[in-house]
Image 1 (cartoon, one colour):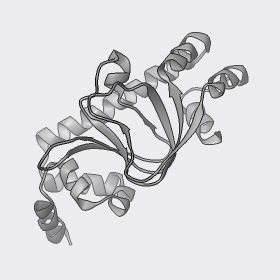
Image 2 (tube, helix red, strand yellow):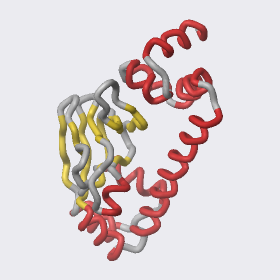
Image 3 (tube, helix red, strand yellow):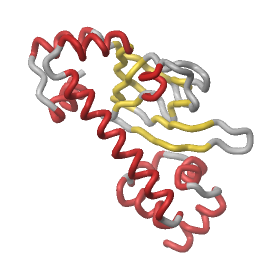
Length: 188
């Protein structure tokens, strides 16, 4: 549980009373590789903090899934739009590796926001961070070539390329696995 406190304290220091209240709401969960933690059409009820593992966010399609996000240790994951609106999710979230996380349900999260001195600040900063990541991805898809997106990914998150199947990386940068193979050959 120390890793989540360290993460939160980097955003905004949480006093011991608030930490005790927040941490009392957390539950440790473990998932096997390739487990869906949010299914298409289901309503997201939890926010998770990853302590071990890799998570993929994607839109399932008959011919090929569309991957739009990866998350790693010391990051939060949730179907945020579904969590906020309490509406069915338009995508799925799955584990790519054996994964361990701390989870908090939405009702308890709202209590943390209401009853702690920094809960709202942390929530706002996390939402701002998610927005910046999403905005950067959209701009990249609209303004860069697939090769540039691959190189950006390689430079920003080299761990991604070591642990994630190439078909998911290809989908993430918006190309077929064959096109990604050609890009990789050109680069090397």
